[in-house]
Length: 400
Image (cartoon, rainbow, N blue to C red):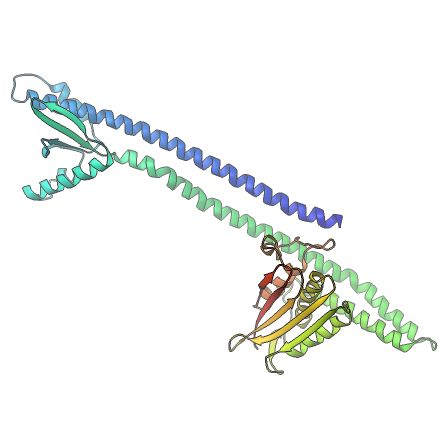
């Protein structure tokens, strides 16, 4: 019991660290977005000042136009803006003054006066939605400078999202690689444990078989006892074979499915609580065959049935049904009348180390799912479950 608790706690600690890491990444992501947002706002404020200076400069230029004065400094100030797109509107009409608008500066483009004015009106409308225009006064005329963010500001707005998306992609790839490596390591541990168990069982089983023969040589020995002992020894041999097959490519053979399942249930029925009533129903032809490793498949059936008996606390009804799904697929439903599975546990029942029992390593359903899906190209899942009404596990196999 203590060992299982330590085993489960290891996985809980790993899950806890995962949430801490996700929380830290969220904080870093928020900090990156905040920093670039502040940086973009500063550049945007600076460009607004450029626009204000531009408005003042344009007003001065228009006012002094035609006069004998020097305003070279103002011209240099106006020409210094190489990034912020701007259009001057005088008395509600876009003027010839514009800056950093590639379409208007493209000499290869042949504009008609009407097309050019329509384009300016569209640009002014778009700029007005982006920023309020800056007003300036020239005599009795009122002008406005319409402007939009430069390419630099727009890049600063989108860059953090691109950066975070890149980190997310590479982080996801790293996490997938780590998870795959961790699962592979777990699988090696389970496989090694199973094979070592099979190896350790081999010697005492051979010794037990020899001792049975020694006992049979005694004339006073009850042969019926010897027969039962041989059955148990053969059972141990079957268990050893199952463990040795885990992690290796199992040898498959075509077996009659109804007969195989029924035999497994008969074996279990004599070894489970007499308060559990077992029902078997087959809706498929008696000669239906599937390609399986018999030792491993029988172990899956027994494991699911034993879990069902445990869920009913040794009292209830167990229903095992075989039914056709499609032309080539067969379903095996194992239903109990136990306590059901909670939604929280439903997501974890196939994970290594998870168990609601006081004893056990929590590997039964994990290995059962692996045997069905990896070795038999089938499916094992919880078809339905209701609290205090029972659970139905479904196995889906392909007909041979």
